[in-house]
Length: 335
Image: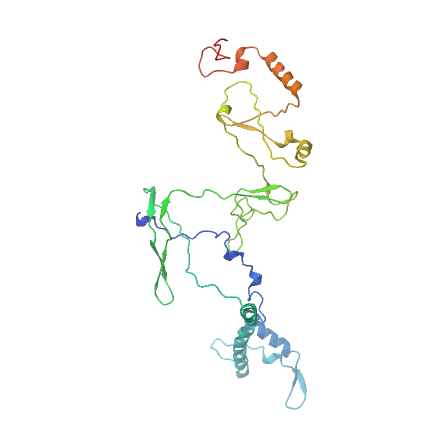
């Protein structure tokens, strides 16, 4: 594998991983006890000073203290001495504020470690996911176990190396698309043709973590669902279905496990309008006409109708792949 095939690529969206499932609202620092900044504290001091009356040296009341805090630092870093002391006090207050905001984490640590006696898990080595792209002229390449990958240097200048855990064969296979389907409690299915998107249909992911809904769960369900309803089906393949031209009748029988009330439930459903049958043609899908005979008389009537409408033997036997006689009964060999 040539060095030209190595690329540093950042995945545009990390999907949903275990780390992203942690709710931000459960983090100790989500709501600070005192989240005010320097400007907020200055505004608070001005508001408080406006409520305090100022008494002059002549023992008279004159205005309030707000004018003492309506100061700014000059471009040459000069200001009034009392305002400089006030700013120094605010800087020192930030230290106490940091300690105050750490009470939530300290309380949680005390509860989990000292009260519940929970033990922390042992440290684990870092893990990383790499995207390895082969050179154009290489179809596949064996990457041996413990191959080293450089990841820069740590805080003390030591080189960081990652190793793969086993032999891996790198080839040209790529994930073309991600799709998902979701079933609600009422048995309705919803599809997401582009699972790794905001709405399941390819909309841009706006979440800062790049997360998306891997299971395609709608925000609202039927009838006003934000996800498309899915149509499910299954395929049946058999040599007997390799049919040529002509009118053909296909009977597909499904055997279900006996359950109480299942037969009555099936009879109550509009099965003719529930299912669609599509046959794979040479160029496109061919939709079959659905018909379910109810009794033997109906079957006999349909057989007689089919025979009466036939004008030639080809209408009954169909066209053979080559010209020649058609032997309806191989044992007799006559037509």
